[in-house]
Image (cartoon, rainbow, N blue to C red; front, side):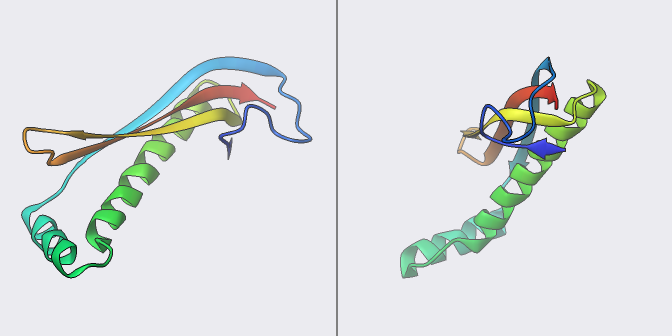
Length: 105
């Protein structure tokens, strides 16, 4: 499955537009990651635990997008957009949503 942020795929004409497709993932940050991220913020550096969790959520959302596109008969998704939101009372949840247009090339 080709997944791209561009509206077209070079050298592969789009034969059929099948519609909008989405994928979402909501993940929670646990107390230990929060603690170590706080220490990292104090001493400087990157918060690797959060980066890993963000990457995991993005992978889940993108995989869900691909599955839904395949169910529609698509072999590509164009115009993909990634969005990130913080949810929950204290911002303890991270939502990653991915959307694009399912197509046949």
